[in-house]
Length: 339
Image (cartoon, rainbow, N blue to C red; front, side, top):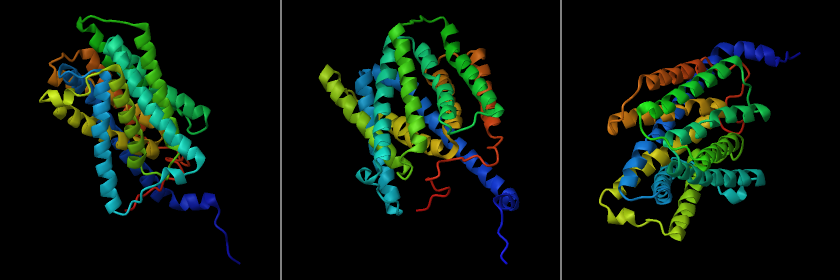
């Protein structure tokens, strides 16, 4: 007679080995998201340099996405040489095809809404509206049954959001002029909603499509849509050829503040889930404010330092590990990537 091992017995036997694997994946996934947030955090100072060089929001997004796409294509080519197959979207299930269209639309909507929000209202105000998205991601994840919002995650979310408010709002106390435009605030919230769509759809759909290929479609759609919009509005799309430093600015931005962080962000979402990824993405304003202090000589207020400490504390809380039995990623994503 063969004795069948019950799942509970199997978990008990594998527990000491399974926990380190889970914790290691949590740590690596978290570091991936933090690096992505750091890349996106470059965008504020780089956008300032780009506008000084003659770009407007739409032309800047179009060129940033173009160079981001070139970066992603290089990654796709390099991984193809290692045996990672190209996934034809036409062969995906209809729900996954819709998912790819949804993240492409969310990328376009987020960029357009956010950069027009920056044009209408004070950047700090627009960012305060946009960074409501981690809380919205958590609410949607719980409502859809994708994740559990335990006490640790609630505490981390509250800490991170409070830290973000201190970091961003600290800039408002610097004595500069503050412009609050209702449409600008609304556009910041619209951008947050698009980010929620991106995170939610990315975690559960088209999971057989490698992260770099999925982001290639999203960034490519953004480049095309914003280039067409710039031409239609008579924007300065050709400024990249007229100003000596303009090409270098958008090339650097596209690679390090679009292509690479976009791939890492999607990889992180798939590894640790939308709620954790959203919380850790609050490192983005912390990096942006710190770089502004270093590169643009903007003062770093004590309240902003306190906010940074709160965000770091939230990140430490998240490293306590996932509860036993919690799924750290969609079932269709292999826990170890080969190739």
